[in-house]
Image (cartoon, rainbow, N blue to C red):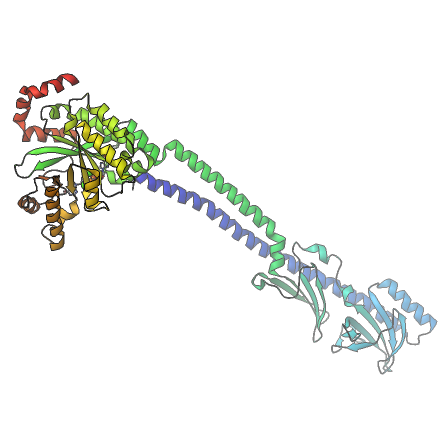
Length: 541
Ligand code: C2E
Ligand code: CA
Ligand code: CA
């Protein structure tokens, strides 16, 4: 395929890369940022939660020590009053009570007296008279509380209960962008309390890979605060930046594509480049001689297009013909080639009326009669006779509408032109094409010529093609003849016409004309004197 199409695809791929890379990068960056931000937030929340927990236990312990030092143990009215006073000092205290040596409740100085059950060992604290432990209240759905206990020498005691709920600071809910789970854990007492800051959270998360957590351990109490943000919560909280990034990326993609398309249009794009090339006369006919292998005479030529670029590069048709056909540029290109060939060859052909000038047409040319009008318009007034023209239709691509193609061929023949079926043996057409289309000439594909001297089967095909041409009364041209052996074999089989590198490659106009002049020098004079040529020469003068 043609270069520019490569660069076109490359442009598209580059545009895709330009777009995909930032989106992927941005997403990765956002994900990383989300993780590190969340990690920082979690550490911060865990630390400040622990600070509050410690402060509250400190405050409760201070009240307990004050009461204990005063020897509050009797449940008398003064003692009760003092206990009440403690409540004002530490509002989060749920109960202050006096217990006897066996640990049984004597009286409650503040709050509802509760029957408690220890659920952890008693841990010492910084004060030698105070211990800390976890207790449970109630049997069904037991509530957990933290118990600070002051012991008198006689075994009796004073206890303070703190509802675990009260240990969590109020700011907790508002501190983080994502929902999270905070837990306070007492050594050997399990989780005292758990706080979920968002209703959708549960202890177990569906995307544990993404979950992040942080923990801090108290230096004063056997406590640990652990905070974790499950993946789902992180995603929920951060989904908007991702949406913005991707929507933004896609908008950017559209923008880049649009710019690429506009720039592509400006600079042409491959089809536009072909159209420009046609306008500037860059599609040039080259001429490959067709030789009579029985006499060595030149019979004519086939026109093969070349794209001669401004820098002098000569691009072969394989690089642009299919794009020209697919885009319809082949129609003006064919017209331009015919006009150019007419001008190049007028002189040489006018004086040698037997020479044939062949053009390649494609399936699209056989869908309506435009080509018939073009051929007549270009050649009727010229010095090249319509009878000198040969139009080739390839068997490689199927003709979509055979009856219509038959009509176009008949009209071309009615003008006096001959029609050849090209690349015979390569396509799906075969014998039925030859019969239905009513062509005058068969061009045997190079593939079969190549097989000469190698493979018996293919040689048999050559033989049968020669026979077929004879039976159908068609001329046969062998294509792609490269060796003397092939020429000899073909000649031996009765093939008269051949084309190929063994004689000449496709030549620029000047070289082809020189070749004709050299191979049939007298015919010019003879033709010049021939009365048959005079009207044609006059007509175009
Ligand atoms: P094609 O019509 O079968 O033309 C014969 C191709 O074989 C030409 O290739 C010619 O240069 C090459 N050739 C001739 N003799 C030999 C040989 O001895 N050995 C080898 N290896 N190759 C040989 P080219 O010029 O590259 O053209 C390729 C194809 O492009 C043509 O195949 C034809 O289908 C298409 N094409 C060329 N010019 C035109 C045009 O003006 N219009 C259309 N529609 N198609 C064209
Ligand atoms: Ca051809
Ligand atoms: Ca061919």
